[in-house]
Image (cartoon, rainbow, N blue to C red; front, top):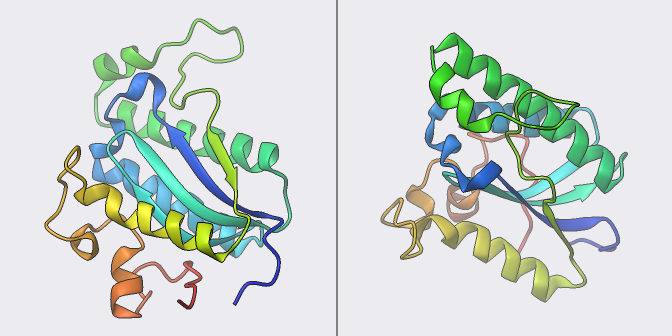
Length: 174
């Protein structure tokens, strides 16, 4: 059981203009690879996640970086990899829809201000984890028949008690 909630957050990052860039399986893998890296490097503990077509939700604990550093590094890395993936797959026309008018970048993959909600207690922690797991089966999305059937989420690991598919996931006891 978690003792301190001071560095545990519900994090939502949205693809620029809510475009459905994360439908692509390779782009989803880029996200999970980046999460795995951050866990292995001791930057975060990841307690829950879901990768939706145009946004991600994470339940994470910051260990060795602050919100700004994590967000900047995670978004920069995933953006660069997604752009490379689009170029390699001859999706330059699609990439144009991410063109930026800012001087510090050519493309803008993620919205500028992701949402951070600090977790205050176990009740909120469990509510956010349930929200993450139910998101793919909501009426708006209807991406799977059940939450544990959606492949790009921590729901199956929690349902089965087996996180071997995403070994970087730290599962919470209920």
